[in-house]
Image 1 (cartoon, rainbow over the protein chains, first blue to last red):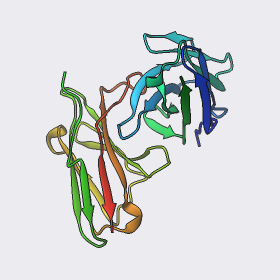
Image 2 (cartoon, rainbow over the protein chains, first blue to last red):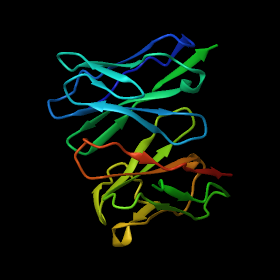
Image 3 (tube, chains in turn orange, cyan):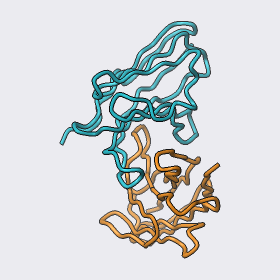
Length: 109
Length: 115
């Protein structure tokens, strides 16, 4: 069963970088790694995704380990609006999804 | 571009009653998902449609939950009869087809309270 493991919570200071880790040791070669975040009382919001190579977009960077058994979401400068629950999700068997419990990120001013 | 629409936003019912939720995905998105999110947990996929066909409903409690997507656009999720443990937020999401290559777009959800 494809699963992800994330820390329950993390804390960061505003304006500092944040590294959110995710372990997915059962990943196979065709499984995509997606990251979403969920603000209070809202639906999840897409952040970034990748397959093998590191990815960058306007919101964040995704660093994928060489063996693909782990990945790290990097927020380069945390703001108070980045406080949310961050989910690392495996898209496995081409169309099946696994959401873990996520990491609750607290950003301190 | 309009996002995923869901209604109602909130619903309170008593146990053993029936309830239905509606979802309108983003135009052109062939894939539609229904998730159940219990307080403090991550979303759990209930059912996935590709156009109007079911791709995965392995976690849908079929004795009480049903879903349909007529004409491959709008979708409804029904619970009949509701139980206390069905209290949750029900999220609808849509995406273009692409086997994990594309992001999912989520609606705001429907918060169901079963008394």
